[in-house]
Image (cartoon, rainbow, N blue to C red):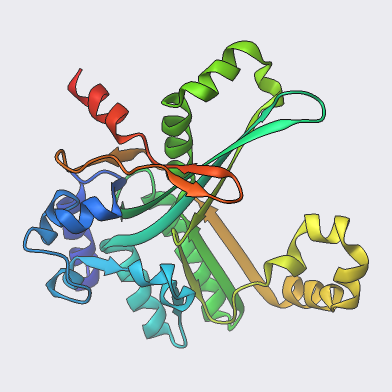
Length: 285
């Protein structure tokens, strides 16, 4: 066993007690970062000593390039692969949940929730590791064959599922409609920003040119804007890989910080936030 393998095994054992995904509201993390992980017990300083154990990707929220690892050599790939597998990934992410309630065939009610979280992902977790190692091996084989590839590791599904469920359950207005309407007419939509990592040796895909919805609904625009050429070139030249991980969530909060007030909005009336008081109540039961 070489030194790298020994270090990898040691890091897996060291992180084995850490949940696959740990998260806090961003303002709570700023107040008491040590609650997210002990490495932050003396405070959170981007690029500080925590970088030995933490891969800080919080900057990706403002600059997508900071969540992209562009590898130009096998050493680059090995270094990036090692960090992804053995360090804890720290994200600063924004999430939005929208609930649509069909009141009639022509009318619907909509409600929005928005929040910002600090999210710590443990890639040594059993929920992630096997799938991650397999995909990184595939990317390495592409690299060794001098083939272009783009690997996206998306960790948003677990957060979106947890957030949407908690927000809707704690909102009386929604529960009222659940009891009086057929829930088949209702649906929720989620969007998360900066909870993915890209490892690539080319460029990220241009989503609008590869989207089936775009091709189907806006075919003339897609065709005239060069979408057809891009689609054929991308599919023929680049191995685009995307893995989605639906992780169990461990949520932590600072007990003395108040729940954030709902935010007025000129478009939708009001934007709600995480029902922290309800979560606190349940945690004390």
